[in-house]
Image (cartoon, rainbow, N blue to C red):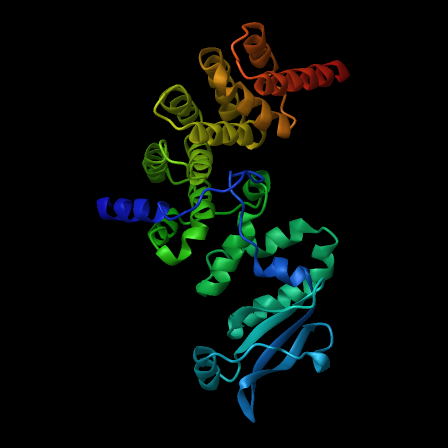
Length: 345
């Protein structure tokens, strides 16, 4: 396990920080499905018989294939693979805005079946049926086909954490942890960490706690995923440790602290009752001792319309414990919105 930990740390060092996103502190990458939704024409292509370095459309998933002039040349690797597998194709999509043709994926028979299923659902998904989109990929994230599995993980990575919890997933913690050291799949680390938290595997608690510890003095957005997963799996115990060992510790980087606060905000809205109560109890005490965390708490709890920190943040204002005018304004705004929400009840 020590070797695995060392490899994982090396992998984490290559993951860039990103701006905050919906629930886990980073921006998930665009998926093939996103590109399909943004396209006006989608075709499956193979090399032209008389010109093996030129693609020709052999089927259409969207639009008319007859006018598909694909400007991409057939690379040697794809040409050799498709020569050996006549059923394989390459999927191209034409952007709806500028008409650019993009190569989206190499499709074997299994991946093509999934993509065709996606294409049939595109009208509903374009109209906003995100629930159906999430449900489809919830059944594929452990698929034996690597390309299908990775697409499913990317798709699950884009959903709100509350939705992820409601999908009733049953991840295999050991199988997921065995794939964390794959350096070619670093972009899948956050969602895999979140799935470990949802696995219910008590043996993974130490792994998640160690992950938070190793990320305390870095600027990696992956901290948010580890903190969220640890809270999911360890509940009140994790809430207490995150507050006392990290939020109140000067050696924890400010970015890491903010991601921990965001993870707590996520669970304050989506977690089980005992975890929510523990988070609020810990944060109320922490804010009194570390008022510099008040703006982050106001931002992330306010973004989720969670006004449970109203009294704690009002106390920070009353103590005049913040120096920056912008921080004072942000916390005052939260307290005012919380008061209005209480008045409406």
